[in-house]
Image (cartoon, rainbow, N blue to C red; front, side, top):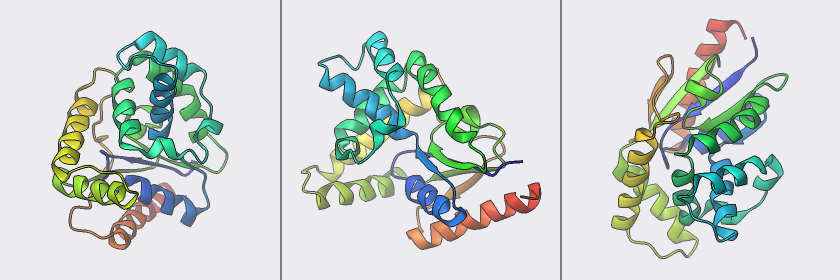
Length: 214
């Protein structure tokens, strides 16, 4: 069995940082699948399209490839995150990106993917699955610090409202909603720094490796 590590969870839970560290530790390629949806949303906005237009969003998704995600700071903005959450509700967009994500997961030797439906849809047979979360208040605080450090002016209250709105949309969408896979290990990072969270994640992966003799 190939070592595929699926890391799911809501925005600003720490899943992206944890996934990147796990990829580095195990020498595996890493895909932040949220960037795919951010790229679709950003492309749609750049073309003057509506984030409520499923046909246009699906067309944008079909023309996407991994090279669109390289060194694009525009994909890390709050606006891109909101756009990603909105286009991700469309079944056509998710279907268009499914093959790309599954091909990444199927690489020889394995891979690390983080998102919201990795363990349930993209790689349901992954031997190592984590669901990383934290309270909305803590996650909003983390994202607020990141954005204000980059000179982006946003209040904590607005950031919290944005986090809660995206949580509701991601968990409530009809196509591949954000849920914890039955065999995923829950990792609550509310009271953890990044080193403690990463150490906990690494131990979860090591337990999975031992179980599957990887």
